[in-house]
Image (cartoon, rainbow, N blue to C red):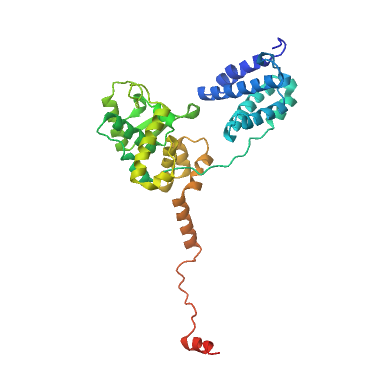
Length: 334
């Protein structure tokens, strides 16, 4: 890279100064942005037939960004969500360039005008409460591993926690005396407190009493924190068993996040306000929470029934005209 070109310096100030110092981004966000910028600069270097160290600010054009986005979808076979994530990282970086290098502001603004690509929003998968009950019956709670698995499934359904939030829970985050509650460490360093059912508190209390760990609650057989893959494996195993007992489950696909969706839908079915559910789940916007109202068939049926009654289309008491028998006879003999 030319010594006169400040690209390396601006990349450094973006990550160490802006993301970490000014914005206070989480480690997860920093790594996601790092991967996006790394892939983009590597693409630009290949397009310019240079090494990454020789890429200059003048090479970061809107045409190169568009080419990179096409490369993600066609060559790397990335989906729209991943493509939009990379573009978000690039646009955030280019906003930093606008602030730090206003001389090329017009060049950067062309990149900032690129929109995210629209994608089809899939129907949210969730389990009905009766289906969750069948799932919760599957772990053998007489065994320590089964007690852990039951506590994890119950905890996910009770709190609606993301799987990363659940696996990060430590003993210090739990209050297992009334009022039962847990402190969850959410995305963007946002903590929230969720109440626990007495059954959940009892299941967690047993885990803690039977474990020698002083840190994480949900542990693997080796005594270390359970991994995401480990939790997904356990959920798959019990879901397969539950599907043998309740065949309708064979039509569904289970992931740890489905338990979060199931919690949200159950709260909606119970009549809880959307703003309360937003805070319960740790959503940034109530619009995110509103997705569950579009996916729940039971709620749609209740709304439709209420609409039917409001429209006054049922049970009309007005006597209807019916032809008399002699009239019918007259008509038949015409």
